[in-house]
Amino acid sequence: MSKRQKGRRHRRVNRTPRPVGPARRRPAAGRAAPPPAAAAPPPVPDLGRHTARTWEGLRACGAAGASLDELSATVGYTERTILKHVNGLAGQGLAELRDDRWYAREPALAGG
Image (tube, rainbow, N blue to C red; front, side):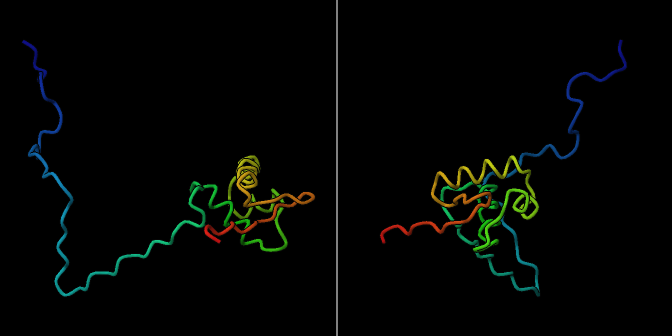
């Protein structure tokens, strides 16, 4: 006979089923519950997280605009990625290329 155990070899402790549903936390005694963090709405609804980060970096450059390498250093993505983002932004009318610099354009307000 083999000395190795056959069958269930993992999770030997705490095999009780977990309750279904959202977890309920009790506030600690003596401490006030922190207020819920107000989530800022995304600047433009159809942008992904990374493209929105590029657009915010472009908006932060202001009227001076930014070249690809400046924007890459500001946002932290490679120049190739930045180029993909700003080309997509230009397709949506949120950025424009003048000479070799990119400039942010504010989105048109709906219902205006």
